[in-house]
Image 1 (cartoon, rainbow, N blue to C red):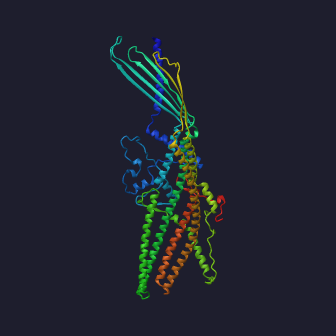
Image 2 (image 1 turned 90 degrees about the vertical axis):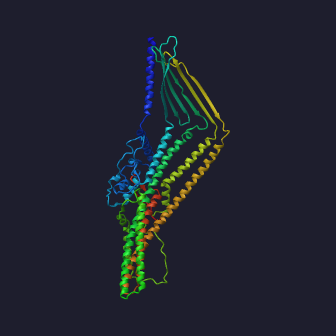
Image 3 (image 1 turned 120 degrees about the horizontal axis):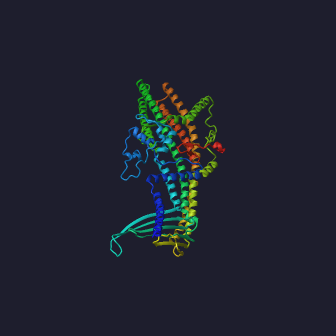
Length: 632
């Protein structure tokens, strides 16, 4: 009797240890939603950092948590702008709904935008560098691209998880009472059934699947002197594919694709950052150009008002006919219309720019004119140089009309640093364009899918094996295994019906052809873009010089006509035409300056050489470091 009790007690201790193990496995899987989210973010950041190093040879921080004080939200709050709901301010402002899993998330963390001072009744002045950084933190498109990188990292970890150990654990208990009377029994007797189940599954990269489970059953009669017994069962099994679906390259294809997809999306995100930064710069310079256009239109309008007043005085004095007064008035009205139109166009462009960098279009913002002055400084120097040249040429003898006319084609004298030799620019683009790397990677992916589709045409031959160990209904509680039951299974599926697989195989070849055509089309598009950008640089530089000469001539013409009118040797129409010509030349000169600068950024983007850091700021390519000579 004592021996039996000791055996039962030892059995209970053994079972308690097994239950504790099962309990620890269960508890290890019972994390809070916050822990799961933080674990997902941590894993994704580790994957992204590793893939950044692989794809770009560098790493940079990447986060998808939007802080509370991004500039958009601060403008809404501090400038008193209208908004429809708390969703406009951010997810941390939303009222938690019923059963909300995390009370303190999203958290209201701070961002670098907090350093930007917003005055309630004053417009916020932004420079180009500030606009680039604000766009990286506030743009909804920028945020969506970052989230896409994280989604690819999440999927990769799911694919990796297929080749990790899977634990399944369960613990159950049942209590039953028997009230029937039988000889030798007194009162009600109860029986408690307790079972624990643990299962481990492992997929191997060669296609084999291993499953091992352990079950513990415990029965105890809840009566005085009642008996107890323990039952154990273990059923390991393995399945090994020998033909179809065998081999690492077949089994791990989804994982391989997920690994490559993260690299692709990192390349695509880098490409997006460059395109985004150049787009913001283009819109920023466009607004500055229109600001300059408003200034020119205002000066032209003032000049037309003065001309109209002058014509009226001269008409009253009998020095001008009434028709010329009407011409001056009409020109004044046209100048007013142009001035108003330029102001409204500026407001439209500024609103579009604010939306592009993720700010409310009704926010009070103005751009820094210092950037325009810095941009147009070279053009001002060119105009001054042209004036000096025109002055110097005025005393020289003019060629006769029948003299031979020699046309001077545009040359590369005074060319900018990005007017590279065409072949060198194309080679740089083909070497550095990240979207071309993605397209070439898609070709290799399509090749692998041909291999996978071909594998599905083969016969399926699987080798399986199982073992069964059981030790049940031992009243003495001993835990020894007397033996086991083993079995092996070989299954064969002949390729008699492979209609769906044959079309999938044929389609894989079509997809491969399509992928190669994408590479060819993109390659031609890159070459076309580079050639066009080089021509745009040349045209913009020539336009800059031409418009600088036009401005110098128009200014001289306005001064001359003004003097002729004072002397009674010109009509008011001549002055009005000269003023219109000056306005057009001034606007064209600013447009040429902006076009040339934007073309410099665009060709760097199209060559894949414009680097953008995590804050949205760029680092420009320096051709001098590679010894490229413009125009050669």
